[in-house]
Each structure stands twice: as C-alpha cells, then as structure tokens.
Image (cartoon, rainbow, N blue to C red):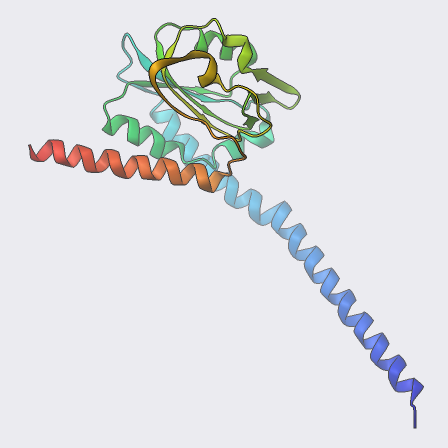
Length: 212
C-alpha cells in the first residue's frame, strides 16, 4: 500500500540534510576566506618580506638586475609575496648577479627603473597581462610606453601573460638577450616551479665551481 507520509518524511529529511550540508560548506568557505587564508598568507608575507628587507640589494655596481614588486595595492601586496621572492634572490646571489629590489612601485617609479641605463635585467612580479602590469587598484602600466627605452639583456615577466599583445621583451630585449614571457595565464605555483628549477641549477653550478 502506498504510504504518502513516509515519502514526505524522506523528502523533509533530505531537505534538512541538504540544508546542513549547504551551511557546512558556507561556514567552511567563510572561515577559510576570512580567517585561515589571511592568517597563513600574512605569515608567509611577514617572513618573506622580512628576508627581502634584509636583502634589498646585492653587490650593486654599474649594471644590475631590477626586481620590481609591481603592485602597491594593499590586498595584492600579500599575494605578490606568494611568489617565492627569497629563493629568487638566493638564485641571483649564487649566480653572482647584482640586483636591487623595488617594492610596490608607482607608475612614475616604474618608468624611472625601466629607463635607468644601469638596469640590465628586469624581473617583474605581480598581477598583469602580456602587454602590461597592474600597479594599483585601478592603475596599470603598458609596455608599449617603453619602446624607446634602453635595451635589456634579460626580461622576466613573472605574472599572467594573457590577452595577447606585445610584451616588454618584444620592445626592449636585446638581440642576444634572454626572456621569460608566456602567452597564457600563469599561476603562482607555475612561477614558483620555474624559480625553484633555476635555484637548483644555480646551486648545482656553484658547487661545480667550488670543486674546480
């Protein structure tokens, strides 16, 4: 015999379970977004930034590499530091490559760095696209503005490189220069993988030199 009451009970029970599941997910996401992720991110930001501030320059002489931390917008400052900047600096030290870190620059400062004839290599870290990089909440700078700048020996765009257009390397990289520019979005994990691979290679090369 058909029992309509039992069907209704099952239906209500299912709705209650779905409601609790929905609340669980909402609470979990809220805690993650508003508590866990900020706490963990700020921890990384604090210790990495502390290292960077102690190592802002290395053997700066006539020519050096400029490491530009492009975003000066507060929430994105933390995410810029999700890139393994300390390992990048360690890599340059192992390679005896002179460098200077420029932290959270304005458009005016960015232009001054790129047009500086002493800057031979450029590393740009932040949020951007192939043709430009974000500097603030509503501020971007586009690489076509530097088509007449002095040529560089190396250019690394460690940010998203989507939406097409010409990169900074397309404008000012020397003929024999090296560059890292993709034609698609890059996430932090992919960028850190490249930095880590370069670090391992630099560490291996430095050991070989010590053995000679």
